[in-house]
Amino acid sequence: MLPNREQTEFYLKDLETPTGKVINLTLAALVLLSSGIFVAETYSIPDSIRFHLDLIDTAIVSIFAGEYVLRLWSTENKITYIFSFYSIIDLLAILPFFLGVVDIRFIRLLRWFRILRLIRLIDKKNLFGTISTEDGVIFARILFTLFAIIFVFSGLIYQVENPVNHHVFATFLDAFYFSVVTMTTVGFGDVTPISELGRLLTVLMILTGIALIPWQVGDLIKRLVKTANQVETVCSGCGLAFHDLDAVFCKRCGTKLPNKTVK
Image (cartoon, rainbow, N blue to C red; front, side, top):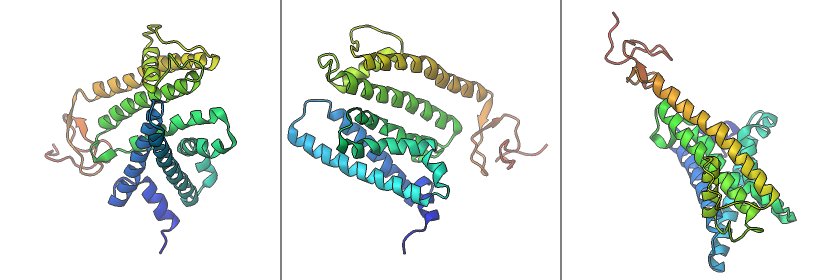
């Protein structure tokens, strides 16, 4: 019997059950593999290897397209889903492949946004079964946000500058180095873009680095300050890990904390 819409929607979002974990972690692995293929293709590799990598990437995009259709089919409010953040990211992941048949040159820039699909998993508190606290989720989100931003900007600047500035932006590593130096506002000046779009991306990198990175780090600092006077006492009801020293009941769900007595 074919799974109904509710079951399909549940397993596409679930990280608790074995089936949900397999589905979502497989999709995460495909995202990383696809991103790795894009990076590898910026280097000089034999045509035979490049051909096989293209076949693998085509298969991955087909899976992503099928996943997008399933998510759209299984959701109750389709209009809301289509314009949701995650739906837009999913669409950006498959759009370059299908629009590539009409030779839209810069549409391939969107392929670097595939890495952002992992945000869906970062939002899960039990990511990979190893992050079970709010602090762990925040820390993982900060690290991933920084990595994703640098990765996307590196891919974009490479795609824009490589055709006109090949000797400077020869590989993805050159673009990655430029992105890190630019977003940290170090600015050595040994690698510079020459195209107008490349310079515009550089400005966006600097603004993103100034605006987003301090905000993310500040979020982590606030969390560390908040938990400085707390102890790790895991609530059996909701799983909240940290509570005040004199707390007897969970501040989130009201469950009595283990090894605590009511005065």
